[in-house]
Length: 449
Image (cartoon, rainbow, N blue to C red):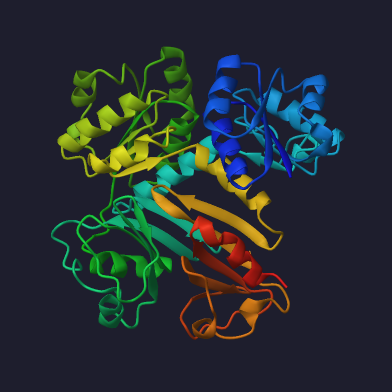
């Protein structure tokens, strides 16, 4: 399959890498020769230098033979026009990264389909929502909603004094037989483990647990965590992400939000827009300013400026001042393992929203969504069982599942079920499957007829 990626920046590079790893014929288009050189040196893809809104350039990239076009430049208008041209030239699927809400608001005259866009992705909006989830679930390093929010996948890092260390997962299940949960994955160093019941927990393991929201507090307690309320929150950076986080959090009556923005004009705009949030104009890299504004009294500190190094450093300062929860925006995926190793609580990454949507289109039609998690070398597939598919032939304990596969839960109509060996998947059911990249194609075949 030929795929065209418009934009050779960080997000475009990531998307091109993803498509290339899936053995697709990838062409990256960008005006920046240096950016394209970097792509060619690192990836096995073709490049075309030029404007993605030019029909001539798109023809040179092989647009008439392309099945998917992903436009992820930093300019909304370029992405929209590129997708519109792709649609007119017969591309089956077009995906645009768009920061503005103009095409998704319900009261707008024009919408995405009017421009031939199949999917609009708002990475900043997704990142903001993730930050808010992490603030609300104070003990978590990661929070992922599944099955229309009926199931939560929560990442937790085990503290050295955690009583669960050294115990098997089967021991934990036996301790709370009435609580339905599953440990779906363990990140141990650079390894991703999809565990069975005999796996023993170790110090510093990052454990990913699936449970219904009402059972999460019990699971947290089992793993040595408590549900702390974070009420005083400081946000560094008044970008779209920072503004959205501030707006969502300040709507909760129990939360007091303070936002620091270095640009005076932007700070004034945000002060009018975010009524109940205190907006301060000041240099976020000024440590004295942060301290004088009460950083040490905060329950949570969120750094979402465009300067990733500044986000890391200020979060480290916050941890030094005993702030309970720190969240940093890190667009460079290479910083995420570093952030965890030096003590930061959580990181968000705008690239993941784009990657998830592209992956969903790459999978078969029965794959409804794909999720990835920081630091975890596994995908979470939401996959529908087709009529007469192999997975429907017997209960799970009698299935010959490939190694590196764990079926987490099953959505049967409006009912969700944490999967066990006795679970029977039927045609039309949707399963949430943790799967290592090497066996994804085998798992897809199990759900296809």
